[in-house]
Length: 157
View 1 (spheres, rainbow, N blue to C red):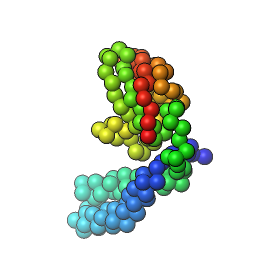
View 2 (spheres, rainbow, N blue to C red):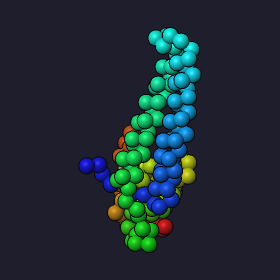
View 3 (tube, rainbow, N blue to C red):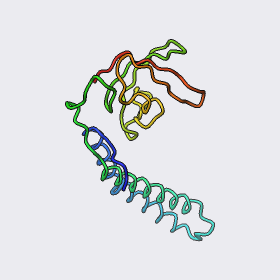
View 4 (tube, rainbow, N blue to C red):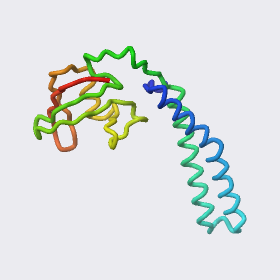
């Protein structure tokens, strides 16, 4: 059995919409590309056909992943989150004790992670290390460059 995937209602709706589009328009577009490539003749030397079949494989893999994620989705009720500890959907302000720089992260599921928006996955090294800790705790995060101590300065939603 697959692990549960914790999502906000908005994220779940976005995944359902992506799946709907992939199954309809995405499949139609790929079928059209394959038909056009087939019409060009000899399939053994047809790069367009090979590319379209490869794209079809990628699309079907994405559809399967979306279906699994949606099937294993568990909605997170933001009202029931305890703000005294870091949990999924917590916004955490931390200080890197080595560089003395502050950063703010919102912990989300892997499907919602977007570093440009400060949203990090609870499965990432930083996310995993912060989960369950409180303001004032210093956690060590193991990253490729070594261990970095982070002090939790603030937890909010």
